[in-house]
Image (cartoon, rainbow, N blue to C red; front, side):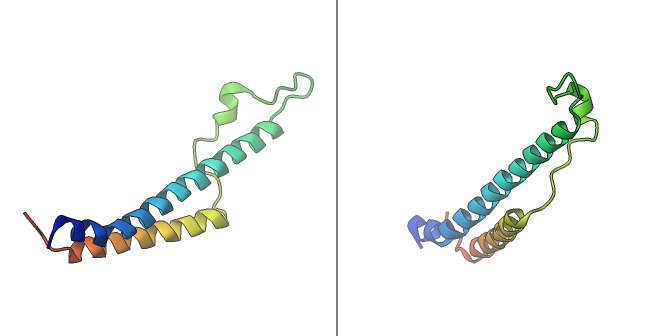
Length: 96
C-alpha cells in the first residue's frame, strides 16, 4: 500500500486524540487559574486589599483544580482518540 493510504488511516484518530488532549489541557488550566483566583480572593488582607500575598498563595501546592463536566468529556475524547489511534496504527500495513 502507498504512503497516502497509511496516513489516511491514522489521520482522523490522530486528530481526535490531539483535540481531546488539547481540550483537556485548556479545561484543566482554566480550572486551575479559577481556583487560584478564588483562593487569592479569600486570602485578601483587609486594609491592604490587593488579594495577592506572594508565597503564601501557593502554600497548598500546585495541584490541579477540580474536575468539571468539560474536563470529563475531554478526558473521554482523549482516551477514545488514543485507543482508536493505537488500533489504527496496529492495523496499518508496514511499508519500507
